[in-house]
Length: 202
Image 1: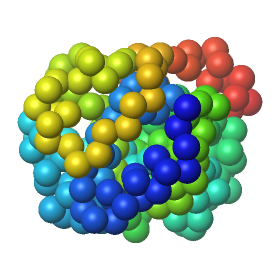
Image 2: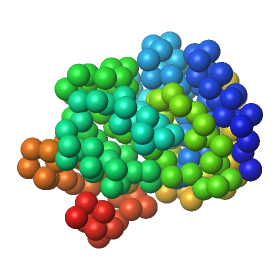
Image 3: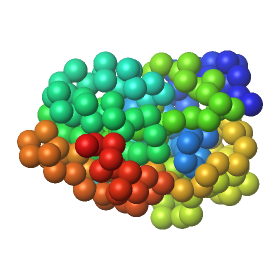
């Protein structure tokens, strides 16, 4: 069971420009401050991930995500409220180029995890974080800390043990044309299937 102390240590790690390993509602992730270039570069270096490949920006509360993206149109905002929190990564248009270090340019990936009670203390973290799965680029997802490559565990400034996780990476849903024409498509299959998405967006 995570506590307020875990949330505090995560906040301190992000503020200090560190890289953290943390549990989510899907798999273990690597996280850092999305606005600090040295932290983002270090996260990519640890993973061996090409810097041109974008990463998601995670919020632990939906209200915080919506507050940080005031340019969202009514239909996009309604979609976020219908779909999140949950094991989804939503690709949205990013006309104001927010979080440029996350690499998406005119697109932005957003995550708001639906944490089980034993991890819910992390909801106290109010700041956004850049998040990518805690594996080497192209490697298997980590369900347990023991699944994470030793070099990542050694290289991280903070490791939070959340026990065993579901182990299936988030469904990635492209909503970049949703406001304009109601179009959406699944980019990566995950825990939320098409039928459930159709129902949530109806």
